[in-house]
Every structure is written in structure tokens, then in C-alpha cells.
Image (cartoon, helix red, strand yellow):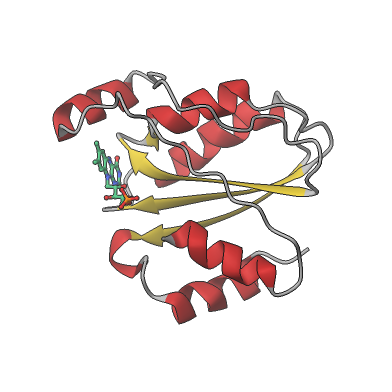
Length: 145
Ligand SMILES: Cc1cc2nc3c(=O)[nH]c(=O)nc-3n(C[C@H](O)[C@H](O)[C@H](O)COP(=O)(O)O)c2cc1C
């Protein structure tokens, strides 16, 4: 939902493409999900574009799971390429907020290794993911290029 709002925000001034990660084998059980995320597990993701060289800015969003990214995001961050000297926006949704910064930091360090040189971040509490005006005002404040 936040990704859709971000797309709408960027569409005011840019061409935007969105990739949704699907991990059909990921457990639906909270405890299994949390244990896997805590161990930095990878999930099989359905075929998706990993070559990102044609984009000026790449945005990566995940829910925070056990203080880190969801396994599907770990897999995508392993596999994506073409990011040398690019700018990235990292965003999360979270419940209590515990581990949110750690999650963003983990994503950032994986992307630094891929050559990303500039980062912006924002995070939305799960109760506010549908509040478009709130998210738009946060984006206007934090996500400008
Ligand atoms: C397995 C699991 C682990 C979670 N761990 C955390 C956590 O460590 N910190 C936190 O603030 N929220 C945590 N949450 C809450 C989620 O981040 C929140 O429900 C999610 O961002 C909502 O986005 P979604 O609807 O896209 O899943 C966890 C949720 C799940 C399912």
C-alpha cells in the first residue's frame, strides 16, 4: 500500500515502474516468519526483474520482520544488479518500531556493497499505511531529488 502511494508521489514528475516481490513458499505462520527473518533467511521469489541499470532512483520497501527485512527482500537485495553510483530510497512499514532502524541499516549495507552511493529513508507505522495525505506530506519533506 505504501509502495502504491510512493509510486503516485513520483508519478507527479517522473516515469515510474513498480516490481512486487512474491514469495509463494513463505510460511503464513507468524512464528515461522519471525524465526526465518531473524536468521536472515532468503525466500524463493517468483521471477522478477533484477537488472536495475536503467533507473535513476531505485526504491526498496519491506515490512520489518524480527528487526530486519522480510526474507523476500533479502533475496531481492542479493540478486539485484546495475546499482553502481545510484541513489536509493529505503522504506519500511512496522508495528512497534522495534528494529526498524536496524532493518534499514541492514538493507543499506547490502546496497552499499552493490555500489549505491546515496540513500534516503522513510518508515510508516502499520496503522498509517492507508493515510495517503500523511504519507504524501512525509515524502515531500524527506524524499526529494
Ligand atoms: C513475522 C513478523 C515479524 C514482525 N516483526 C516486527 C518487528 O521486529 N518490529 C516491528 O516494529 N514490527 C514487526 N512486525 C510488524 C510488521 O512490520 C507490520 O505488521 C508490517 O509492517 C505491516 O506491513 P504489511 O501489511 O505489508 O505486512 C512483524 C510482523 C510479522 C508478521
